[in-house]
Length: 63
Image (cartoon, rainbow, N blue to C red; front, side, top):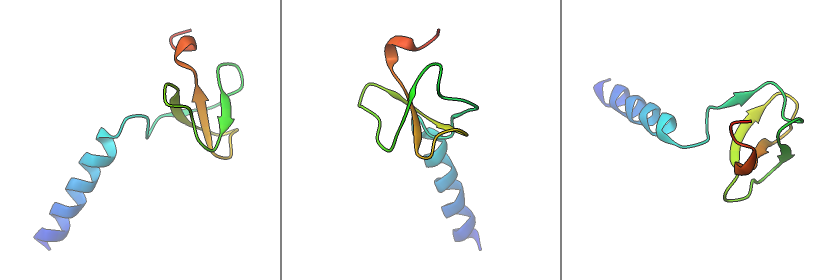
């Protein structure tokens, strides 16, 4: 049982530390584009109106 708790805790730490995952946007259209794979410099979000991912170019970040 302790081992399962340890594995679960490690999984949570890794999933929270992964950049770009866990971020959610309601809409992607005004600032980004929907794509199954984002470019290297783009920020990856989960969006309600995209089937795959919402990719936001870094030049639009903060606007």
